[in-house]
Length: 529
Image (cartoon, rainbow, N blue to C red):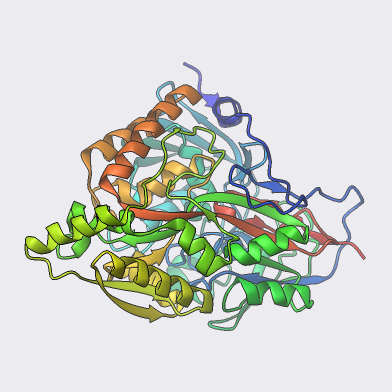
């Protein structure tokens, strides 16, 4: 069979009818919304001006194999430096080319062929070619890689350079949603020359390493990242003179900085700040994510969560409505389902149910078999996170848990959970989107043998495998139904809310382009004056 272009093959699978949650609408936080970008200005782009962006969390570096590289921590910054192979359009639910010219697949989705646009070079002059893409992705696949993409790039069995602009991916098994991988950190391609030259310095000063619309001016950890426009950008003029990324402790402070004019754009992940920005009809983009608030559970041997009864007790002890009321002033979207409302392949399976009597009984049974009832809760030290941790602690102790709370700064929290795996239970998020990213998030976090949460369940794994190869909406819905049922029984984590992750910007900033993982692209953004 002739390879099928991804824009055609996957548009059919993703073209589902879901109401859009307007970025400039009435600010509703009702579950079921889909992401939508504010309308681009129809006038001619103007050159000049700078913006400062308030990030939700500081990135752990500028190397795509080190940074978390998600919208809340690093993805927008890194995409500006490295560009993307593909962009996911969350409004149309299709993929569009970045540095790619074309992506096609074979009949059974086990082989994908990427053809790059000609004439692209990295900032250091190195050719942005098929072998550069291969080497860049191999860095994520390396045995000692710290990349958060390492788990799902292992789904690639082999990469073959066909010619200077063509790279063939042979997968371990069929994957209909493979293009999503090239919209994530695996698609932030690094110059092989720069990688060899810079070594570990790449993480703090990636000079010449990217092919994106901006280049690094300065990086001061715990303070700011400053980028200036790339005068030799392959995709034509970059209109903004510079981008600056800064961090505030929590969404409330980020929104306050936006309202006061300190920043011109910002990421609001916390429910109250996102809700308030929606009510104010701030321009921007919003994506409703399932399990946007999550009590992560370490199911590995040696931790209390290794016992299924303890995991089930955690789910039964936590009431999402109580968290919404006490922590978010009722502005959250309480939900124990891992999937957001309006999920295009909605399984129709409710989440776990708050049941204190059940939780108490399960805790007692686990204690009878030798567990001492103690469990450590790891949480961020940000102000709202402190309220969250105290509320969770109180709910768990009602069921008989003895909770030790340990609070660390947000970057240390990310490292403890996703890199070192040093926790029993922790404040976290999966952020399940309404796209192929749902499979990626589940596979990356809890779906493979060496997953970071030490979770294993045969029924869950079987259902996730069906999601991986599903071609039609009906097949995906059936697979997600099985997966939701297995989630409720095995409890890999406790979802407490869907979150309206919101990126806001000033009204005279245009052509900011959302992509996967609630990241935004500034390559063609411009300010009207």
